[in-house]
Amino acid sequence: MDFTPDSGSITMFSTTWCGYCKRLKKQLDAQGIGYTEINIEEVHGTAEIVEQINGGNRTVPTVLFPDGSAATNPSAAEIAERLAA
Image (cartoon, rainbow, N blue to C red):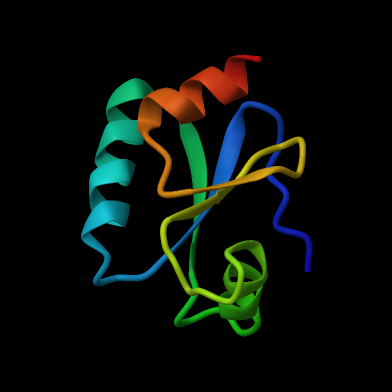
C-alpha cells in the first residue's frame, strides 16, 4: 500500500492513546493543514512501516510528506514549513 499523501497534505501514523498525536491533530486542524490519519494498531502492516522509518521503533506520530520524506513527532510549524517548500 502507498500512503504517500497528495500535495499540500500529510499522512500521519498514530495510535488512539498517543497524547502527542492528539496535540498535533488539534494544531493541524487549527492551521487548516490537511492530513490522513492511519492508526497503526488497526491498519495491518503500518506498524512495520513506522518501525522501518524510525530505526526499529514504533514512534508516533510519524508523518509522511508528499515528496516521500518522513518526520517523527514534528511540530505543526515544521509541517507547514515543509509543505510550503
